[in-house]
Length: 127
Image (tube, rainbow, N blue to C red; front, side, top):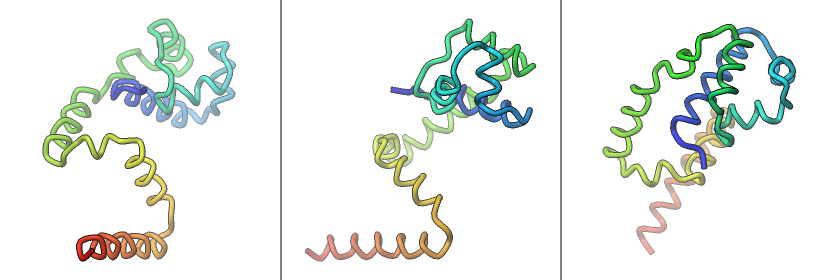
């Protein structure tokens, strides 16, 4: 299971790769791995070892510290959000999948889905 640190490193990896205009395939070739491994790193499914992080930083022409930039603040924001909003609910995979799917919709279907969800909540309270 991905930790917050794995997810942060993966996001920073993806951001830097895209900034340089590299595909996952191109980056993977530079460090001698398969592109699927880059995919797994970027989504936080696999941890990036110290040695691999060094190779990636060399290939992406960024210091290793780049990958950790903003980590402390991100962890603090997440902790505050969990404290304020019953964080367990927001850390579930189901919740994250739902949010991602929701934001992949165009505006009109998103509104319809939100209205449907609200109506189901009201119906559930009446039952």
